[in-house]
Length: 291
Image 1 (cartoon, one colour):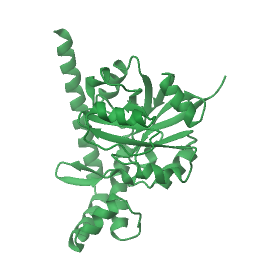
Image 2 (tube, rainbow, N blue to C red):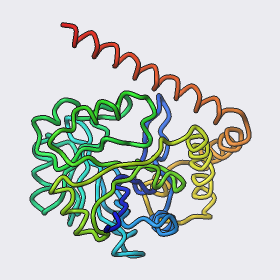
Image 3 (cartoon, one colour):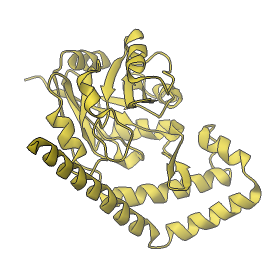
């Protein structure tokens, strides 16, 4: 029997920009493209899809380290939610309609995927997956621990390739979620998605991973401020624009955060909030089904 290839179809690097949490804007990911590639190689992945937010810059850089391993992708924020494009030749601009976004992906012979389509924490296409021309649905997203998002994606994926991804925002999350396909090459993955012959697997990202991720963001951002990491990306660009006094405040804040109970407290509170949202969504869905 032919062995199945393993692909992580949803990962991020330090080129993913920033995410806003309440009034605080923090780097979305601090993993370098090279680090992502080396971790994927060590894990034995056949395919690593780099899908940074609204850019393919990180994916292009990662591909230089292992051309056969890396697929150039992008997680594009459309007006109706996030959409992943794989096998891209050029970036797809954000803020278009979902239909236009998918059209631009397909125009360059790319694959259009609905990531976390029923997310309780990220912009998602929701029920529009039934009217849009997706090639596949991410039915398992390792970062979504709420119990609702993945279950709803699986329930609504009929007619699409079923895919799994880690949504890794740190190197130690890579491979937490994955897609299985016949073969091992990039073309094999593309064919499997087109023919809807993919499988999914993995484990949910642990609280420990989330705690380590937040500490890693503080640590790596501090290295950029101190010029121990001179990689040109959105993080370094933003750091170069802030005053020295704010840099010192951030460094002090990072130290206090990393060596205090705050990472644990933030992870526990955030996890509780997300799971409560998931429960509310389930209750709302059950109420709708009754009528």
